Structures are given as C-alpha cells and as structure tokens.
Amino acid sequence: MNRIALFGGTFDPIHNGHINLAKTAVKECNLDELVFVPNYISPFKQGSSVTPGTKRAEMIREILPTDNAFRLSSYELERARPSYTYDTLCHFRSQMEEAEIAFIIGFDSVLTVDKWYHGEDILREFPLITGVRPHVATDEGFRRIEAYREKYGSRIHVLNLKPFDASSTEIRRRIRSKESVDGLIAPEVEAYIERNKLYRVE
Ligand code: ATP
Image (cartoon, rainbow, N blue to C red; front, side, top):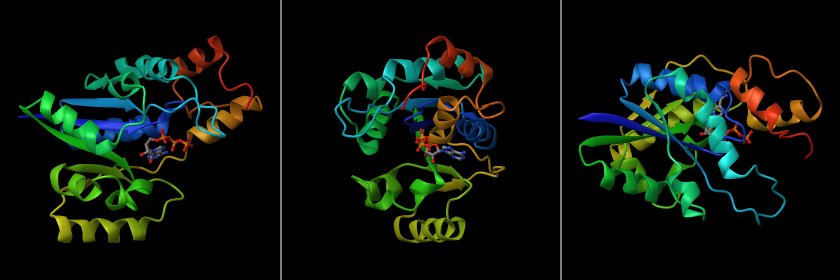
C-alpha cells in the first residue's frame, strides 16, 4: 500500500520550517509521496492581503526537486472556495483507493483539531503526522495527543524534529523591511519572490 501524506497550509511563502517538517516526514514515515496542498484564501477576506494561490503554488513548485517524494496539488485552489480538511482528505482517499492517506499537521493545530469540521472523524479515520514547533505549547500538545489516542484510537506520529524557528509572517516582515531571509527560505523561493516583487508592501 502506498503511503501518502497531505501537507496543507497557506504557504505564503513556503519556508524552511515547512521543508524541514516535510523532509523529516518523508524519511521517518517512509512516505511514497508528500503532497503540498496550498489552501484557497478568499480575496475578499477582511484585513487579509494573501498572495494569489497561483503564486503560492509556484513557490512550492520551486522546491519540489529537492525531494523525490514531493508533489503539489492545486485541488483546493481550483475549487476556488475555502475547503475543509476533512473533505480534502476524503477526496484524496476516494481518488487513491490503494493508498493510505495521512495528514501532516502543525503542532499548533494539534491543540484544536478535534474542534474542526468533522475533526473527530479526522482523528478516527486518518493517521496524523506532526512535529514540534518553537513557541507552541509542547506539553499541552503531547497531552492532547494522548487524549486523542485514548478517545478516538488516533494514529499520530510525532516526528523527531529539530525545532526550526521560522514563520511566513516573520519572513514577509523581513522582506518588507529589507532584512536578510538567508537560511529561512530556499534560494529558489527567494529568487522567485525577488522576480515577482512579492511582500514589498503590507
Ligand atoms: P503564518 O506565519 O502566516 O501563520 P506559517 O509559517 O504558520 O504561516 P502555514 O502555511 O500556516 O505557515 O503553515 C502550514 C503548516 O506548517 C501549519 O500546520 C504549521 O503549523 C506548520 N509549520 C509552519 N512553520 C513551521 C515550523 N517552523 N516548524 C514546524 N511546523 C511549522
């Protein structure tokens, strides 16, 4: 059975924290494919100035060659409306009956996944892969994971991840104020941002 994991996020832009998590997941969980699934964000969302989905996807495309297992899906972008994670997981499960579909989830989201749309079903039906993130309550996260295992029989793999301090928000801020993003994003992504003049204004 093929082992596939979906990695959802805004990826505005994709950074080395994401890539570190993704590469570790491929290795530790023996994934055949890791699929980045950028979320659709409504252009009418108040107070948001999110980069168009096509550009966020193109930045992900830049780093795909860095790991054989990396893939990109524009499934949520093409639906052109916000998608629920549970629906996306069910879609991939129905498309790939021969595969086991896992979901990669940031440690911050572990705390709330049971409150998501069909969150309890996600915890029952799909294996989760997570890894700690700096500034996120680690003890609380581990307590939640234990509780999910007991209550829903969840299969949750906590990666042996070296915490990497990066966030898209901080990277956008640095680019806006012309500070260095060395080591925080891939050079290919940095070049793309430069070519497309992204994040120069808020
Ligand atoms: P923002 O700063 O805009 O909130 P972000 O850096 O959290 O963005 P997202 O696209 O929202 O990026 O992240 C997608 C997923 O990756 C989330 O589940 C998030 O928890 C996880 N993630 C992001 N950065 C890291 C990191 N440095 N270490 C571990 N996980 C991360």
